[in-house]
Image (cartoon, rainbow, N blue to C red; front, side):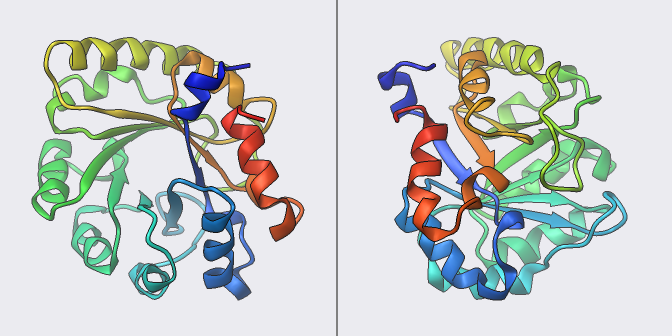
Length: 230
């Protein structure tokens, strides 16, 4: 289990993919009140991944309900044409997959040019080296510890090595005077896998099923347990 000092630095980003979509505004308010740090919004197009979720209109509708950072994960292709609509809708962090567009550097420039934090998402089979030439443009690296497209999947153990390798690269980058970069993990995060992801070097955990399990009365306990301070 992580130490209390390290746990205090860990951010929890509940994925609304596991929320009650009939009460989405209320669910976002409930997890914010329960201690969430960010709100993670999974955007799927039924093409890049085999599922369809939400568009910019839902993000815009949720924005007045919550002042936490909106962490928007774009699982769509082509992705470039949708960056500005999500930025305008209220996203604070916009993350995309290198495979979703032809020019990763240009896509990250676009996100930053809109005043948003830029993230790169690494699927289980995507090599770490994909970020080497864009490290100076990245504010967040998101490691997918499941294959993207569905909630409730089991954590892929091999991604712990990737998290540790990325932590070493990020720390070296920051020690050399580079910008701060968050290391986020998404997929199969729960009370058992969260401390292992933290120990490997993650400082942001995305959790859908494990956050929303048990209803609103359980959200605070769920979040505290995953943060590692319980």
